[in-house]
Length: 358
Image 1: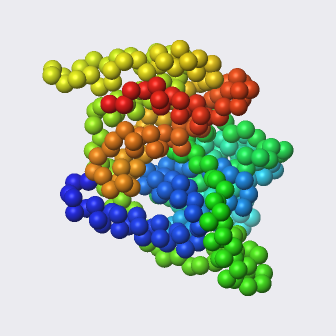
Image 2: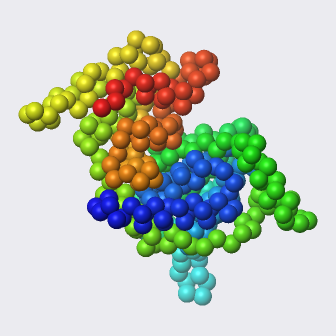
């Protein structure tokens, strides 16, 4: 941040957002911080969790505090690209085609159970996510600005689902794993449900209920983005980010010892962080590593994490704090990892121990 006086203002906006969301969402701090991170960074989010953990409610609540145009799309196996993007409609009176825009023309899109749609629908969504545009007929139409996709998927139900393409997964800034609430949080959920009567109590976890104030309107959101852009990130931290991502790649060049960036300035990243991973046999668990898009996402999210902590500069702990949600969907594991009971989080956590901290 340019001036120290900006810190209280930024923290005030963030506290207002968290307090407003907490009026509907009990706990789930990791998910709420991830939603705010993606909103500030202008990226998309993949939410994965079993039913009943307030994924849909959280997205609806985020739309309410931003005042953005919100649309929910239920993905099903019979969904067509036109159901998402829109189509051309023949007008009998004029003898011409007119464009009927689909639900994707909104600021905030909830793609519910995204892995239930076939590949052709995923391709249409991929254009919208990457290019912020859709093609209907022979004409390309820009999507509203800002534009965010928040997709949900159920990790325990596989019948009638499709594996998301790696190219589409890479377009998500973060993948958030939604955990079960702890005992104290679940008691608060029960008390909240008990405070409502009859049919409303039964559906309190699925209905927005409490009205939220739009505390993150365009002006406040722009202030957060400007503050994140002004967070300082040292050359050595940038090299650390590159080393973390490069260490995830079993193929191609390993991260080598860095050379001094200028006379009298020490090397950015001493040593080879991949050597220990090779010795430990970790690369047999990784089929493909993260792309440079992962480095960019880690760079952006690290600055926002520092902003959340009230610091005008990034430290290695900020990088580590966001490494799992940034990289877990960008690393393709081998069959050996599944056989040995290792998931992406376990592999990334071990990789982080191999990369020297600047």
